[in-house]
Amino acid sequence: QVQLVESGGGLVQAGGSLRLSCAASGSTFSVMGWYRQAPGKQRELVAAITSIGRTKYADSVKGRFTISRDNAKNTVYLQMNSLKPEDTAVYYCNVKNTDWSLLIPGSSWGQGTQVTVSS
Image 1 (spheres, helix red, strand yellow):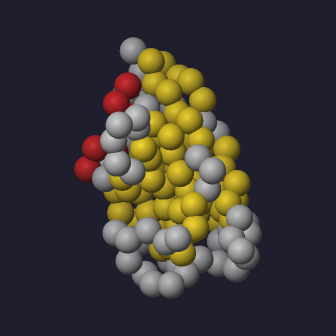
Image 2: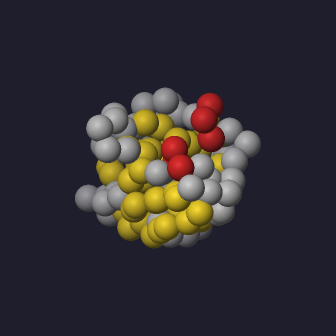
Image 3: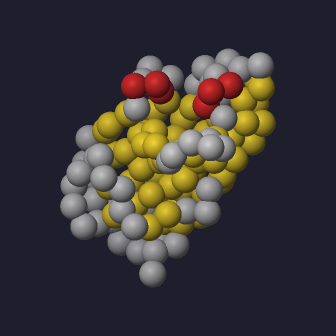
């Protein structure tokens, strides 16, 4: 039912910036977020945001990444600054409207967008 279209991934040098976007179909979601998965590693929460702006960030990205959303456009963004090689991963958009938890993902996932940071 829910369709998520991600964009903004790419190749960037360490210290550079990227801005990811995820446009969701349907009505406003209680929580929208970004997860990432590197080869050989489990998928992990990067950042999540509620419909009223409450946020949660992974410790590894605090101070460097900023999550935001436009409820009118049903779109969530991830501004990534001061990128490091360890940020290299496939980034996935996730949304839900079943609860308000910032720690548990919903069942709707985007196709993923590759972010590669070179040193």
